[in-house]
Image 1 (cartoon, rainbow, N blue to C red):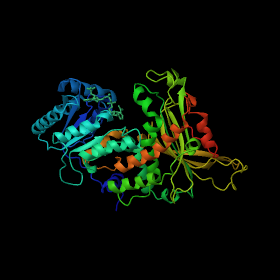
Image 2: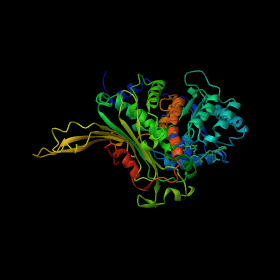
Image 3: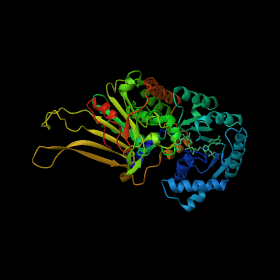
Image 4: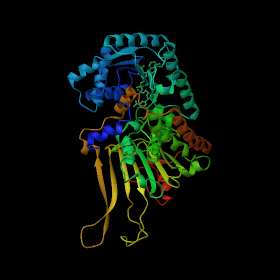
Length: 514
Ligand SMILES: NC(=O)c1ccc[n+]([C@@H]2O[C@H](COP(=O)([O-])OP(=O)(O)OC[C@H]3O[C@@H](n4cnc5c(N)ncnc54)[C@H](OP(=O)(O)O)[C@@H]3O)[C@@H](O)[C@H]2O)c1
């Protein structure tokens, strides 16, 4: 086979169905923040890139009374502000004529009949099949009513085929513990078949995250050393500079463990640790990720205190701006014990990863916004190039940067130029932007396209959601048993609390500075 960059990509994707057919997006929460900042800009960018099917429509829903024109104006404002690619008047005109709005309350059964009537009218006008994709961008408390309403109006019956319409996209948070996640899954599952449900974890749509599988399974040099014999440990960091912002009420209830670890960090861990899937079939890939969750050693009882650190940001400066402590943020109780930071040590108990710690950390009010997966390799025998074997040379580290600048770096040891036998760690960098030019598509672009194409590889299956909640719920129960009144603090604008440093230093290791 002749090699070309493009040909290679096509060959890799050949096993996957990426043809998006004509459809209508029906967005519950069309007047909300997620639609304005992420969903509508994502669809607009897909249109600019020629990735949308020739026929499509978007029907936004919400309680606000808006005309189609109002909705289009709001969408334009959101796209102007948040789109990856600049707003183009000609292209926008083409896009906006396919945007529609319907106002009504989810609690009113009439809404669902109105949706049906409106969707049928739009489909007749635009000559679209009745292929609907419902998007639950509303608070989870509304999921049950929405699903029942849709079923009541005959908007749930699946078409024939392996990935039938209508399709249902479910946003996070899917529950706040195992029990509530199960309840949501049961409710949605009573109305839609698993093959119709797409549970979003937008981290899985990020370019570097998808590249992790390519890196591991399309290169010959990594997989042979991707195991406990060569890897010392793995660090996964997702740090956010911003505080709770406008999400105080939600965050006070959720905290960092539920908000970030249960979904994003555990999914990243799964991608690092999974066995090679035998094909790119969504079911096979999701099975491979699921196996990792099954192998996670449960952290229970006394181990919760040993392996998990939680903390809150106190007063400090982020980017030279004064930040009050978390408990002084508007909407946060002054005696809140909600964690804004979590660091933990996890083990994947299988042959490949025996004894290899996975250190995970995430927090708000930290020094900067940065996400990274770092794989640190074992030390080499300190014989040849180290005058002081008690202070080993810097280890090899493969770091995959997820944000802000997607790419990867590999730290290796090099000889310092000159006649002395001195060594120095150097880093080889690869940045997506430099190599491929245009900025990578936003995660939601890829994910919405996949839903249209019926490819569920990058979505959370029901059993995976519940397995990750089961693991997290052990920690939540351990915290409850501890019953502490105050959490350790870290200064806003720092890398986290000293307790987290101790967690990793006890093992003779250190957190990376990103
Ligand atoms: N924003 C994000 O970046 C983000 C990221 C991940 C997940 N999420 C999740 O996505 C969901 C929506 O988030 P958001 O930030 O867009 O929230 P938001 O700005 O508060 O918007 C909520 C949307 O839901 C609609 N809504 C709420 N109750 C309704 C009801 N009874 N009947 C009809 N419509 C109703 C609202 O309509 P009206 O305003 O017209 O009443 C609005 O369109 C939440 O569950 C959130 O946790 C959000």
